[in-house]
Structures are given as C-alpha cells and as structure tokens.
Length: 379
Image 1 (cartoon, one colour):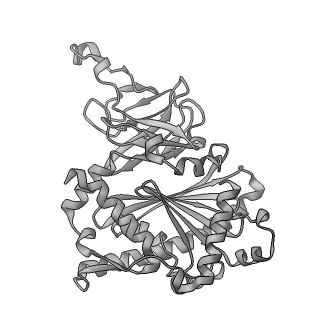
Image 2 (cartoon, rainbow, N blue to C red):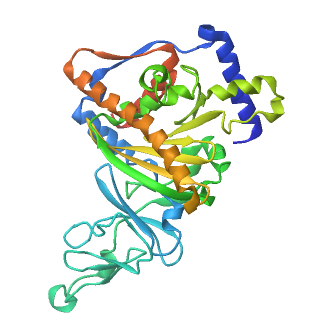
Image 3 (cartoon, one colour):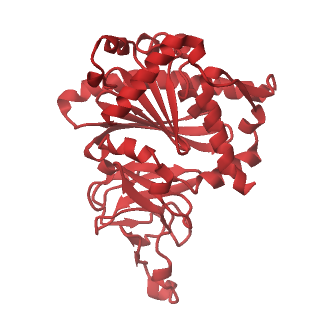
C-alpha cells in the first residue's frame, strides 16, 4: 500500500475517533433471516459465485512444473498445477472415463502426469489424455483429444492463481479486481511463501462468517482475552473497492503516531488491514505476514474454512515465531466462527425474523447489498 493511502486511512481513523458517534455515517438496516436458511437461494448463490475468480492457490505451492494442489469448492473438485510449459492451469479434478476423482492427494511436487486410481487413465500436466490401458481392445473408437481434463479459466496475479469454477466463464482480473488491484500489487505476495495451511468445517452460512470479519464491535466482549488486548474497540474504517472491501482495524499502538510527523505514519505494526476479496476470501495483512481465510460454502448451513498463512521467507529458526503469531490469530478466528455456529442455530430457531446491522456495521450491510446485486441478473 502506498504512503498516501496509509496516511489517509490513519487520518480518517483519528477523525472518527475524535468525532465519536457523530463520525459514524451508516444507518441501521435489517435483512431477512431467511436469506441464511433457504436451500433454493443457496443453489442460486453457488451458481453465481462459480462465475467469479477465486484465489485458489499461492504461486509458492506450484512453483515448478508438476507441482499441484487439490481443493473442493462449491461442490466442484479442482486440480491446480503448473504444466511442463510453466503455465499455471486449473482443471476439474475428474477423470473423463467414469468420473472418479483423479488426484486424491491434497498437494504434491514434480508430478510427471496424473494417473486415475480407478482404471489408470493417465493425463499430462496440461490436461491431455496420454494413456488408456488396453485402449485398442477396450476403446477402439476413443478420440483422446476429446477426453482431456476439463480446463477451468485460470490466471496468475499478485502471488495467487485465480480460478473461475465455471468452465464456460472467464478470469477477467482487470474488471474483477478494479481498485483492489493496486492495493494488492503493493504487497508483492508473489515473493512470499506459504508456511502453513489449516482446514476445518463449521455449521453456519458462509455469509455470516464474512460478516463476522467486517466489524470489530464484538472485540471487547468476544475477544477480551485475545484481540481486545491489541485493538481499539469498535473503531474501524471501511472502503468498498468495486465488489471487494477493505477494513482498517487500528491497534492501540496507533495512538503513538499522533505525536509524530505525518510523513512517518505507517500501518505496519499499528493496524491490521483486512480485505474481503469477494465473495468469501478474507486476506489479513499483518506486520510481516499474511493470513488468508476462505469460507467455502458447502450448504446453506455449513462451510469449510481454509486458512493459508504466507510469510516473507521460510526459515527453521522462525518457525516458533510464525506458529505463535498464527496460533494467536487462529484463536480469535475460531472464537468468531464458533459464534457463527450459534448464530445459525439462532436463525433456525425462528426467534428473529430479521438480522439487524447497526450504524457501526455499515460494511456488513454493504456486503449484503453486493451479494444481492450479484444475484439480481439471475433472478
């Protein structure tokens, strides 16, 4: 992030803090609880989300040809790899013979080809079908060129491989990222490395999880033993960047900048920047590392959480430091998501007909509006 943007965010934070309630410009809004409970709506959501680029792999996970990761997103098994020509590619992780999952490992290095565990049909790293056992006798009419892996639109930028889950779609990152593009460029994430990943499943609607990260009104209560010790309670600056969101959460140490020259102001160590990369990827920018939390929808009341922790460089002597930072971060994330499970049960109980967002939760309301805009053409 450039210096001018950092200064502006800090200045806006000080102004909001000084103005108190008068500085909050949002309005109270209500949304129907049914939006988090309806199975038909969930199906419409997943169809719409499949048309959007998703940061599905970090480049350090597929640095060399044959490196790969697998993931299941929106019910679709996906294989992301680097082909022999050096290009990052994504495919539906499905054998074109009988439809079994082609690659069952979560990740790997240097694969020369991918062999189906069912009948050993073999595919090159560029998706071409290269070998079929007993082909002449069993499949005399087979046209291999028509049975390659189904490729998904994929593109590399800002250290990620962005994948669109609809094979007929496209990955137009210029249009999709908009003003977020410049912010992400400043972090040079392509020069970093994935240190650790974690994954688990929670019983809540995916939208609730994202909303939990878009306000810090809950810090003093829910995170009183974790984040509340570090951050200023119920104070944050939000910006919508195209369909994405940037949240600036100031730490208590930000106050020290009030007595320094503006030109020396920095967010490094004085705040956490959180980006919602629409629709369900949340990138947390810390002092010297990054945490990507993704909430992959599985049903209207269940999602799988994947966290990817990205550091400047891998070093055995830093592992204790990284683990301590990541574990502290995850302790707060798990607190958020455990409450999200409680919220989902509350929604299902019928106690409330609507969800209420306060003036200090304007980002949650804007996020909900963005989802409605996404769904509107399809309804």
